[in-house]
Image (cartoon, rainbow, N blue to C red; front, top):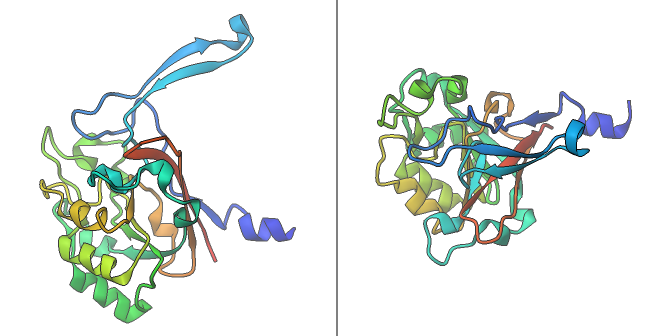
Length: 235
C-alpha cells in the first residue's frame, strides 16, 4: 500500500454528495432537472447533453449572495475557504423521526462540553440522519406543499458565527428547519460571510473531530449557489 492509498483510500474518503438527476428532490416550485441529449456515440461519434437545473439543487453550496445583496457569489469564494477542518454534530438520537427538530445553542454547547469547543475556521456539519429519506419526497421535504425537515435554530446559528466558523452543512433540504418560513439561520450566517452546504449525505461516517471537508462547488459566475461534490477525508 502506498502513502497515497493510506491517505486517500476508500476507507478514508467519504463522499457526502447525493446523485443529481431527474429523481433529485428539489425545493418546491423549482424548475425540474432536465438533460437534453446533444449527441450519441453511435450516431454522432460523441455523447453530450445540455443541462438545465436550479443553482440550489441536490448537494449544493449557498453563497452569501443568496441572501445578501452585496454578498460574495460562488465564484468569489476563495478555494481555501472550501477546504476546512470538519466538526460533525451528530444529533440523530435527538432527532429520531421528528421533522420539527431544531438544533439549539444549548445542544451545541452540550456537545462542545464532551468534544471540545468548535474551533474558528472549521466547517460544522449537522448530522440529523434525514438523508435516509432521499427517495421519499413526503418525508425528505414534507407532505404536499408543507416543508417539514430538521434544521439549525437561530441561537445555534449565532453561536456558530460567534465561534468564527467558515461554513455550515446539513443532510436536509436546508439549514433552516422546514417550518422556519422566515429563514432565520440564513439571515444570520450568510451576512456574516459563512457558506452553507445543503443536501449532504453519509454524515454519520464523519467523526466529531479530526476529518477535513472539501466543498467542491462549481464556480459559476455570479451564482447564488451551485451544485457541489462534497467529501470528507478521515483522520
